[in-house]
Image 1 (cartoon, helix red, strand yellow):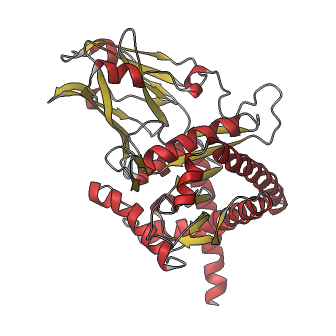
Image 2 (cartoon, rainbow, N blue to C red):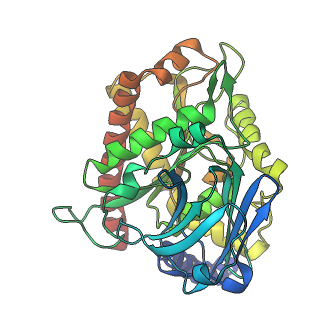
Amino acid sequence: MIRAVLTPILAALAVCVLSLGAAAQGMGALARLIPEESRVSAEEGGVSLRLSLSQPVPFRVFTLADPARVVVDFREVAFGDWPGAMTLPEGIADLAAGPARQAGWSRLVLELTTPMLPQTAAMTTDPDSGRAEVILHLARADAADFAARAGEPPEAAAPAPVRGEAAPGVADGQITVVIDPGHGGVDPGAVRGDHTEADLVLTFARELRDALRRTGRVEVVLTRDADVFVPLPTRVTIARAAGADLFLSIHADALAEGRAQGATIYTLSETASDAAAEALAEQHDRADLLQGVDLHGADDVVAGVLMDLARLETAPRAAGFAETLVEVFAASDVRMHSQPWGEAGFTVLRAADIPSALLEIGFMSDSRDLANILDPAWRAAMQEALVASVLEWADADAARMARARQ
């Protein structure tokens, strides 16, 4: 009798989850700037920009020279008359907004009177209102350092199809993958000599993005495309706003010498599958706990039930990706850990509505792994195997979803 009563209730909740998921997947629509809650102001040693948006959207930050500018691209935001109405602080010569060259993106340009580089670029979301706040801190920089870092990233320069619109010659099987380079900014991750995990995984993520895009079937969004700190929950927010079909976080951690080597793929578990996985999960979560923005434990009972129901669909899909990756890596002779697939409670894997995985491309504490990560030829070989894994999984996942709908 109890089962008979609960079954229709759970079925109704499942419908709610699917509706919520569909709404989340549509968050790439136009966002609106809230002018009364947005400002650009001087702060000690630089400038602070705070933008209040009606909803979260993916964004990227980069600098350009001649003249010196900081560019913030959004997908996408209606700024209205706000840029022209602002009183500009010292250090900012002009503030302008308009469409970016890439279809489906908006651009905000801060023209500088003195070189400044982004020190913080992050987005926070209000769980009650659904609004988002983008926070950008610029610090004064040496002119040579600014010039060395200036340049438009490839994805900002080349036109790309808006999500939902197939590019010419692209098959219906196009998917969106969000790649999350771990750490960044105030959180460098593992450090070995002159190398930081944050820098190494960003290089790897950019190369993987380009390799995936060359297939013509994959649209890619990076959670960060610079050495900036992005809160862990915000990385998931960016994935949801991008309508991600797959979320892949990239890391290259360090454990005690000899304890870990080779690539490892992780999917979500409330309890770590082994001590090493638990230690890594603690390292990743602690970075955001120290920032005071780790909100993953704030869900109420109803939200928890909805998330659990959503995971009934996404968990097998994430497991399918992990299984495919292990098989493809083995066939491609990519060096893997003795236990190549583990489970852990990483915050970035907690999106209930997106199949998610965390890939350790190797361990910086192992000299051979570190040498591989620094080798462009090795990275290219692993990225080729990753591309094959994503495409094989996407085909199998689409077939499985079609069977489920029948």
